Length: 451
Image (cartoon, rainbow, N blue to C red; front, top):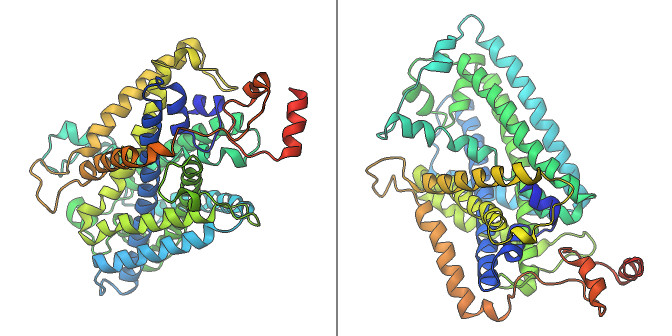
């Protein structure tokens, strides 16, 4: 993805690259499906982040009331909706303020991690778990074989956390030197999540204060395992303080996700890929923000978030929907570039070379295919209506409904990514192939003269 982004930086990103590398016969419908899949997956990401925020906020209430508070699906959904609406209002601020918000989010998260890594060991001092427990002991709490549990349930949190790195793609038209910024943003975010996440997990395991993880941690009355872990180590007041900080960091993350969602939706609507595209693609000139796209993404998140009312298992589909949809959207352009589009790929400033680029590309494509299958399976080998994994219903439904809408109407107005620069001189036009940005006439004339 870093290579693709460096080669062709555009807010459309994934569906734009799909259209570019796909065989001519299928490029329009393929890019249409990927555009819809990426859009719904990013909305699923917002749902999962804000659902986590709702759980964290309610856990603070439970801790404050010493367990004398019942967390229901309706209460969780209510906090979830309030969070989404707050994100909509916040994201409708100017692009400059959104950029400032990203910096605040980074500092808050780093500060919270530093405080956690210092405070938790102090609270657990004298009662640390052994290295043998942390690194060699495994507990299988599902009816799947232990090997599959380690490769699925144990991987999913990391796969979910080290995600949304396509966000930088969708704001590539609002940053300087996108050819360099995109690879740095993608690789930097993955590297930071991997390294810091590993340290946090190891430290948390060393500081566990109970042997009965299933009943005392996973089934905690606080509704959040991390809240119980902090409570056991540091007590009530510190648990409340930490959960408030964690919820705040989660809130900032949701705002970042909605910013990326709005840019992806706006880019897709700009190419007439969505219903009501003429309304969605309008940009507020004063704030330079696609406000209608922000509202569209937020409202869709509220609707999909209704899964919360079914139960916790159904709500987990919000997490796996994000993974399944995004992995398909992420993997398709790379697969097409490695196969049908080999001759069309023009490396950008970030390139792994003729040897490593295809090797890493194929490894990632295979991993994506495996992950897609993995997240479709239920938590139990014998699922019922309560333990059903609704991702296997939602994701294919997006494709089916997208195809129905495409052949019923969208094919009349959607013809792939639109050109936003049109020059009479064809040789000069080639200079702008792959550039997906609105340029004012004076600037366009200046560039054309140089070309």
